[in-house]
Image (cartoon, rainbow, N blue to C red; front, side):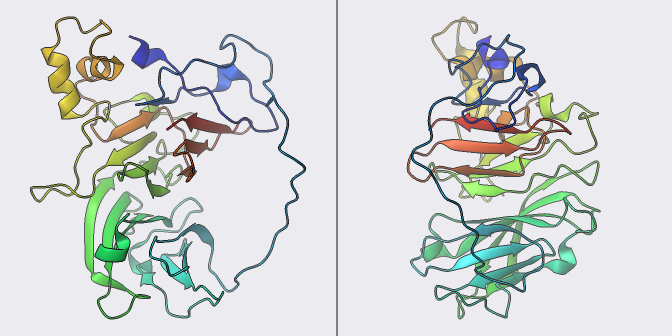
Length: 318
């Protein structure tokens, strides 16, 4: 059953190097059978190979001030050139196309947000691919009233002001219990496929004490993939090609030889893990604080925060 045991090898390694036995297993629905580019049994530090394209020069330029703990940034595909800056305290601010930081927040849900600890707060923002027409966007935050559970909510822009959201139109899509105050993940993005991806940390403390990252009945320690445009009044839908979707399980139960190659490895996974959550796209993550898709290639990069010594970047080709 190669699906369960295969690893996605790092496409990019930090300059510090990594000991491969320390890498957490990370698996994705499309990249889980990728051929390793290094020997998985080695015990030597691995260094990135190849040469850099030219001699890059990096310069920091201040573009805005007066922000309260900015942690993320997003821009809708609406032609306005605006940047939307996520403040951990629970506000979203707009930097308009001429570089002016607007005084009035686009959205202020600070009274809903638990931000007492450094890894809590309003953490993620993603605009619907058709935002220019439907005005819908999504936020990820730790909820005050549940003492820090992860909430993913949908809001819409107001009818009469494109720089202010309609708070009354908020709709809860997803709520996930958080056992501790750290490792909340938080980033959300729409992929090239139009589905919403949600980064979930393992729930906190050191060493993943509940083994949530490998527990496929838990949403913690995962990258989730959901359809925010479902039919039938559901909060969200499950893409049919998620590894543990109902469609996969139905197909798995219909095949004669589950171990065989005919129906594919994702079907095996669904068959042998009937309790797995269908929202899961990838598992084995500690705290995917940031991830994103390459806009040119569609490749996925996940920055997974390590423990004390190691950091990890996971790569899944489009």
